[in-house]
Image 1 (spheres, rainbow, N blue to C red):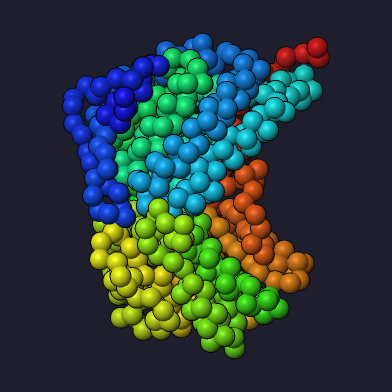
Image 2 (image 1 turned 90 degrees about the vertical axis):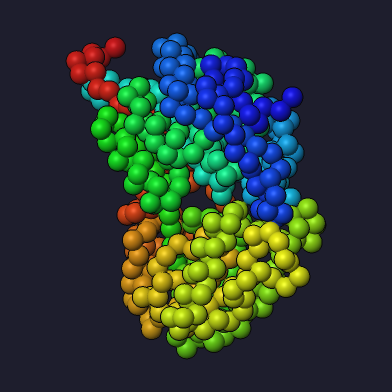
Length: 476
C-alpha cells in the first residue's frame, strides 16, 4: 500500500490531522502521477512532540549504536536504490540514467561519507584541565528542496543522526515522493520511534511553522535565498540556530592557457547538468576578450549536442525543468537576455523542436553578456549559459566576485599553481579546479547570500552540535 498520503510520525505512518492533498506533477507530461497529503501546524506539533520525547533517550545513545544505525540505513537504501531513482525521475523529469547515476547516487555517497567521517569523529578533547565536549543540539527541522532531493535529505538527516539529534523532515511539495521512499528506508532500518519524522506540505503551512516552533532547536534549510530569508525571520523569535544553503550565480573562469575545447565543452555540460537546476552550476563563463568568439563556437556545438526529451529514453540527457513556474521564469529571463542586448548563440525562447508538452527548455547560450545584465546577475535555474569576456586575470577575478552570491566558483588552467592563486581570491565556499570529480568529503556551503554553515561528512556533523566547556574538569 502506498504511503503517499501519509506522514511518518513517531515510528508510524499516519494520516494528516486535517485531510488535504496536492497533486504531484510529472514535468515531462504536465500530468499528475500521484498525490500527497499536505500538512498543517497540527501535524508539525505532533512530529515535533515525538522528536522532543525521543531526544531524551536518543541523545544519550553511544557512538557505536548510532554508527550501526547509519550502516543499516545505508544497507536498506541500497536495497531501495531503483525505487528512489524512479521516484526522482517521475517527480523531477530527470533522465533515468541521471536519476540513478547522480540523484540516487548522491544519497548513497553522503551516507557513505558520513559513516566514514563518523567512524573516527571525536566528541571531546582536553585543553589543560578543561574538557571540551560536543553535544547534540536537539530537535532539528530539516527543510529540503526539489532539485537534488536525496542529496539534500541525506546530507542533513545522516549527520543529524550521527550527532545524536532527532529530526522532522519537510521535503519539497513539488518533489515529495523520493522523500517518502527515504522515510520507508528509515523505518525499515529500525530507526527508533520519534528520531526521524516526515511531514509533507508547503513552505508557509509547514516549513515556516517548523522554523518558528518553540520546541525546535535548529533549522537546516536548503532553497532559494528569498525563502531562506523568510525561514531565518521565522526562526529569529526563538533564537534557534539556522543553517542555510541558498542560491548561487557561480563564475567559471577559463584562463588563457586552458585547453579551450575541453574547458568550454565541460563548462557547458556542468551548467546544463540536472537541466541547469543546481545552485552551484557554473552559469557565468568568463573567457579572455580576444577568445570570446572562439568560446562561443565551442559552446554552441556543446549545447546543441544535448538530447532533450522523454526521461525514460536512453537517448535523453536533458529532461524538463520541474514546474510551470520554473518554466515561465526561465522563459522570461531568456527574453530579458535578448532584450538587454546579449547575443543569442543557440537555443532561445520556447520548447525544443518536436516537443509540444512538458516543461522543456531549449539549451541556451548567450554571448557578449556584460556583468550588469539581468542574466549575469539573477539565478536562472535552467539550461542557460552566459558567456562574459574579461580583459585580464584581475578583471576576471573582479567580475567573478561581483555578485551577491558566493556558493561556488570554477577555475580552468593548465598551470595548477596559477589556478590555485586565483582560487585563493574567490569569495566562494567551494572552488573547483579543472572539473574534478564530486567529492562528498569536501565541505559544501556558501559565502554572502549563498548561506551559512557547512554540509557533507564531518562538516555536516559539526553543524548539528553544541559545544560545551567543562572548566576545572581535572587531569584524569
